[in-house]
Image 1 (cartoon, one colour):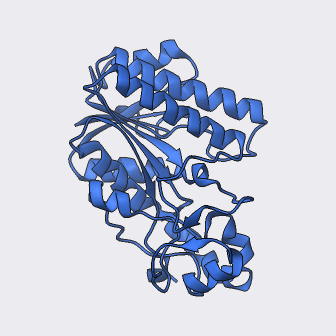
Image 2 (cartoon, helix red, strand yellow; image 1 turned 90 degrees about the vertical axis):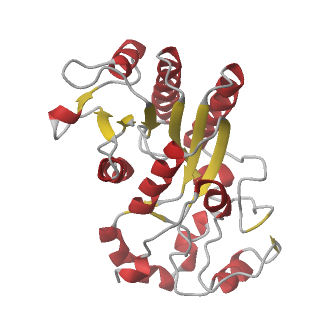
Length: 282
């Protein structure tokens, strides 16, 4: 496929570009920064609708149309900018990408949603463990609120366009191999990582999820939690859950280091199969 990747220079974007290219797709990189390889893409301000529709419609000497869009570009977490700046940047960029793609006849869109919609940082206990996509979203920050609005937009866009496929990937905390050196230190203070139930996603496995979402034969809108199979801790998951969430129902017998962000739906429908663990690098 001919695929545009927004936010291509980001932590996850770099891995997505590498993975899609390795699997034979032609990738057009789009970002606020000038691409390292100008032949692969362009610099664009996605908060400008004119630029967005133009760059998805075609770029001289780069492409003359697309089969799919992967939208990763955003201020990637709360607190990086004033709340109103986070809201304005992220919601405008997402609306412009979604709307421009639809105007251009692109019917395959994958976008980065977030684990934060599950209620992270869990000031209120989750309804059960492991958490999954089955309970109503609980945005606890402006960043997370925008993710909720993006998912809401997607639900309406597929209602308007029955031939459209949109997939929202609720990525856990994205990690590079070099980040794993800090993981053994988490054992000294489990509370330092309980904000997202001690979960993570290796960026290479995140890229795999993107690729499998793109090639999934489906119409409509679906969301998937994308997390690795294991936690960031050496301590058992059952012990961690009992200590931090003693009153929360556990719905299954937990594996020793099983993630409390359930990726079961992604495995079942997308064929997602995490291949990388921090335990292989430390």
